[in-house]
Each structure stands twice: as structure tokens, then as C-alpha cells.
Amino acid sequence: MVSAMKALRYENGELRLTEIDRPNHADEALVRITAAGICNTDLEIIRGYANFSGTLGHEFVGVVEASPARSQLGRRVVGEINVGCGDCEFCQSGDPRHCLNRSVPGIHSRDGAFAEFLSLPPQNLRFVPDTVSDRQAVFTEPLAAACEILDQVEISASHRVAVIGDGKLGQLIARVLATTGCDLILIGKHADKLELAAKAGIKPVEVNQLKIDPSSRLDFVVEASGAASGLQLALDLVKPRGTIILKSTFHGTVELDAWRIVVNEISVIGSRCGRFEKALKLLEEGRVKVEDLIAGEFQLSDGVAAMAAAQTKGTLKILLMNSVP
Image (spheres, rainbow, N blue to C red):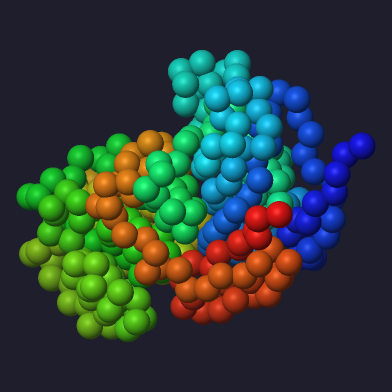
């Protein structure tokens, strides 16, 4: 008999906590979720992004309760979120992030982590170092997305870089890019968040105080504001033949002065998921601090209230915690 579990689900335009069957897939690992993080993608999904229906959530840490790989039993893990088909060119190359038939927990064709248990293939799981707490480990997925930028472009101490957006992802991206020693600014509009960046050693700039000097534009601009206006600002800031890295995922269309990209020969790079190993190493070595980004914690049973809190303007990371049985 399959046991029931609590899950926070978005179905038929409604967000609700309900009970569903616990996952039971013989070829996958069963992970008991101890903590999960609410991100902007989760909020966009309940606004219509990705047309997803099911259990939300893709940022998590948990303990393996069952697995075909016995070495995983009882271990604390996080999970790579792209589950590939195994047969296409991307999967065969060992990188299912762009598999056309992939499933993604809480985003596409697979139930997510806002539940008591989650099912994922054993190969998607990564062990959490003993020195990394659950509250740190739950940031692995978005921190890996920040690390992905450095796999796509080479940024060094000689480069001038801006991150647009002082929210959850922007803060993480700035902290990762700061490890390169580049001349870095974080652009935002919330005094408390900009102060948080300053405490992390990152130069903050309030967007209304930003002075755009055509003679000193930037080598790289990362757009992570979650707003369509962020791309326009990125075009204002980047130098000719510079690079814009797009991180925002939001529901809706964007107006774009494409001629500026052509005339100024600007490279525009989309940037999504990253490899977890680099993120876990940064956490283990203490090179990136994350716990000051936690704005609140809720039990899974209060998941609807947690999502409402996460939607409050200016809120940083909200965690959903599962009490150990």
C-alpha cells in the first residue's frame, strides 16, 4: 500500500496544500525533504509561466530513504533538476540540461520538492558535505545557476561588471562573480538589500542614482532583476562588443531595441542551470555566504502562507521546512 504525504500543489489555477501518494518508482531514489527554497520561478509558475500543473519546488536538500544505489541510503543530498531522456545527443554527452524530452521537478512534467518526499534518478543526486548545513545546502541550485555564468564567459580581475537586480538571484550572482576579483557593482532599488550586498563586500548602486557614462561602459552586464526593464538598462550599460547575460525568467514579452545589439555588436547570452559541484565547493570552502539571504522559514503545512510571504515585494529567500518524523 502506497503511503500518503503532504504536498503544495498548483492545479487548475489554484495553489493548495493537499495529500497525494508518496512517490514509488523502483528505478529512482526517494528523498525525504528537510528544506526547500521558494524562488522567483515558483512565483512565475502560479502566474502562468511554463504551464505547469503539480507539486511545485526545485530547490531542496533532503535525506535518501530508498535508492537503487545503496551507497546513497541515509545520505544528505541535493538534486540536479534536469532529468533527461538518456538517448538524445545532450544526454549522451552527459549534459541533459537541454534534452528536448527532459522533465524538471516543479517546473515541467515532474512533481517537485514542496512535499514531504521527492523522487529523482540516483544520478541526479549530489552528496552534501558534512560542514554544509541544510540552510546553506538549500541554496545549491540557485548558486549553481550563478556559477554557470563563469562556465559561459571568462571574467577576470581586469573586467568591469554589473549585476542588475538586488533580489535573491542577483545577490547570489554578485557573490559568485566577486570571487573573480572583477570590478563589480550590484544595481538595485531596495536600501536594505543594497546594504546586504555591501556587507558581503560588493559595491551597491541605487538605480535612481546610477550615472551612465558612455565612455566608461561595462564589459559584462548580468540581468537578474526579474523585470522587463532590466534588459533595457543592460543595453544602456554594456560597452560596444560587450556581453549581456540574461538570467531573469518571467511570464510575458519584452520590448527590445534590437538595432542597438546589431550596431554595437553586443553578445547576448541566455544563462540557466549550472553544475552543482562548483556550488557545493563554494559553500564547503565558505567562499560564498548565503544564510543572510533567508527572510523567513515556514513549515510545509503552512506552504500557502509561505508562498504569499514570498510574493511580498522585496522579500528574499523563504524556506519551507519539514520536521523530522
